[in-house]
Image (cartoon, rainbow, N blue to C red):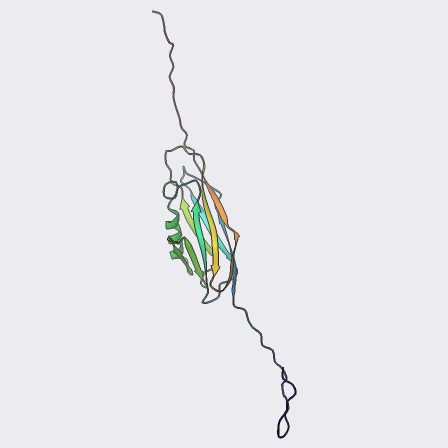
Length: 178
């Protein structure tokens, strides 16, 4: 705001005493959730779909990195197809997404459409196991400018197994007469 215009010689006037400038905030504000197929069979073998969804938009020139870690009682590569290989393939096919397997980090940019899915298929074996789990967990969401949050941090898929241990026993009479 301008006021009290004074000229040392002559007169001074203020034509426009004030103006307003609006500052537009271009920070990213996104959140993520992950879901998966609840249960799959080892016997078929069936496929579990894991889906990561983004709420909010990433602006041009900005990125969001998020850690995606697998755990559970089932073994990647033995009880189901390799988890990292599935994520790498899906990221290669998804515009605006990359995956660094060494750091287990997904990175999204403004071209990302907001949904990232990948599949893992159970591996049938003849070993009798109890039901086993695949757990996918999101953590450490970081926006290059702004904030990134995790709404649903993990999901679990159960691999069911119909293999059973079978044992047989034979008995006989201890002694017989002739």
